[in-house]
Image (cartoon, rainbow, N blue to C red; front, top):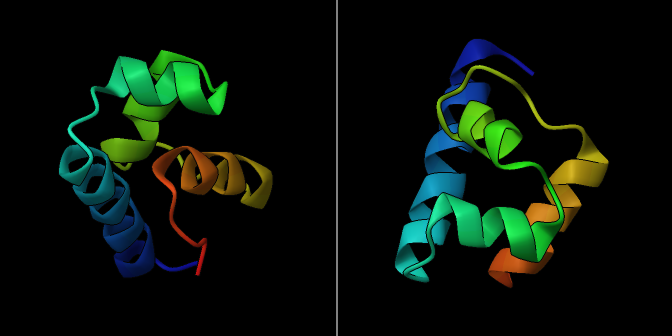
Length: 65
């Protein structure tokens, strides 16, 4: 995954979370992923593995693709 794709992913996670009026903490609880990790994903400081991305997508009720 290149830098541009990572930035897009960070923006996309945030966009869908905000569209569902969820806080990062709510997404953390619903996905089972630590809040600090969610923050890193959204600020593009860490790239989620597919398993984590699937949990986020399920919590946001969207497809991974």
